[in-house]
Length: 102
Image 1 (cartoon, rainbow, N blue to C red):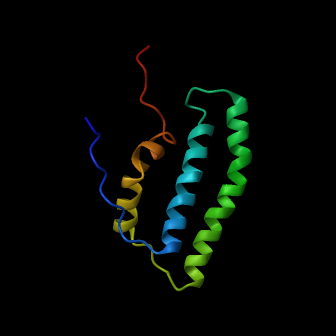
Image 2: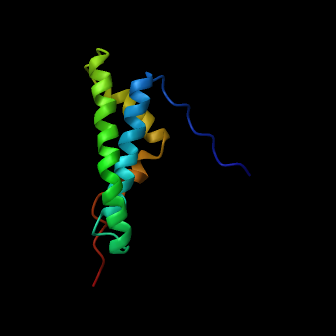
């Protein structure tokens, strides 16, 4: 049995696509750094080191949008794109996990 087909990505400008990609890259790294999650310090250190470059790429994507006159973020469309790209699961790793009994 095949997994259910994902909905198509909404129409995005190239700059919006870059923004979404860079945002998710940053979120993934923050999830690896999250001290409330299992892992080791080396993994967190490597993610923190990579975060510097990814944050700059995210900034560059936003600068490009602004220079091109894309001054508003269309949150409904961008949120749909994030959901298609598994953004809910990926951003959940940044938050605190549920408390454990004990």
